[in-house]
Each structure stands twice: as C-alpha cells, then as structure tokens.
Length: 273
Image (tube, rainbow, N blue to C red; front, side):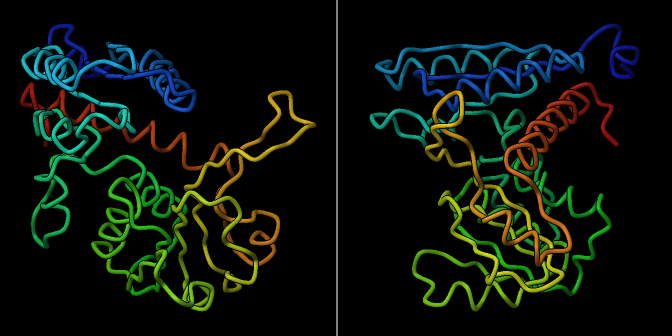
C-alpha cells in the first residue's frame, strides 16, 4: 500500500462500535471487517450488550477520538431506544466521522462552495455508481424516494451538487408514482419492499435501489430472502440500468467507507491533496 511506504509503515485504522446483537448490524459489521482486512486497514471493534448505558458508549467514542492510530469511528445504527443517537453521533470527532453524519459535515454538504471532510457512504456510493457508469447527471431530473438522514436527504444534496433537478418523494407525497415517472434517475431508499413498481419508471431511466428488505420465502434456507424497494422484474423491463438487491449498493457503501477512512489517514499524515 502506497500510504504505508509514505508513512514508515503506518496504516489507516477504523473503529466500529456495535451495541446489541441485531442480525443485520452484525452482518454489516462482519462485511466491514472483511473488507478492511482485504485492503490492509486495521479494524478495531467494540461490542457492547444492548442494555449498556449511553455513557459507556460515549466513553468508548472518546477513547477512539483520542487514539491517533484510529482514523475513522463508526457507531453502527440503529442504537437501542434508550440512547440518544444525536448525542452519540455528535461525540465523534468531526475529523474521524467517516460515516459523514456529523452536523458539520452534513451542513457543509448542504452549502454551495463548501467541502465536507466526509460524505455519507451510501449516498456517495450511489453517485459513484452513476459517475462510473457514465450516467449523465447534469441537467437531468432525479427523484429520491425517502428522506432519511442516512440516505435520502444527503443523496438529494449530492445530486443537486452534480447539477440535477431533484425532487424528494416521501410519505406525505400525494402522487409518488406520477412524480417518479418523470425522473431520468431514481434513487429508492425508503425501506418498503417492492414499493416502486414498473409503472413508476420512465422508459430508459436509471434506477438505484438502496432498500434491503427481508420477505418470507419458505424455499430459501433461512426462510426469507432480501429484496429492494423496487420491484426488480418489473422495473428492469423499463429501466436502461438498475442495481440488484443484494449486491448493488451494499458493496459500494463499504467501498466508500474504506475510501473515507483512507482519506482521513492521509489527512492525518499530511498527504491529502
């Protein structure tokens, strides 16, 4: 790794804090650890029981903030109900906020002419997919379905930064299918299995499906299978390009997390351009 040779053997470090034992969170953390190992990033992990106090989580965050060998801190969401998510995320040093959720990073993302230290991984992965697939964003109509802090809202900001005309469809939007049908680019991130049907898609549109929803399937080994927010079979008949679930956005999210961690290490060692 180039960074190692430029810093006398130093490598990036990513610390993950996991509270409780949600299956989806554990799976995601496992994938992150595996990816770190593949690219030579040191992966540290703190697993806390679900009944841990908020102060215990904050103490671990502070410990990683003060550790110069850690360049990225990630608190796996969602946190248990008794914890204040906003307070925990705000405790992460903005210089180590590789998830990009710190209010300073989100605030800069929302403002023209400002550059956040980090961009949230899933939205950044969506834009990267579009750019690397040579999909024209500038001047195009984009619809983002869902307005979460994690995906929908930052994805809409990023599309706007790339000069798209953006509409956000949410639970109070009265005619979502009609609005989505006008879009050249659709990003679905609402967490409702097969919400977006084929007749929501304009012929030739590009569709990015962020949703990952378990639905019952007796023929599957686990008794369920994972599907997206978009009905893939129907949408694929109309779209010029569409991401699969699983295997589409998920790997991109992890790739962007590793990229943010590498950028953070480069910044710490004075090597970022």
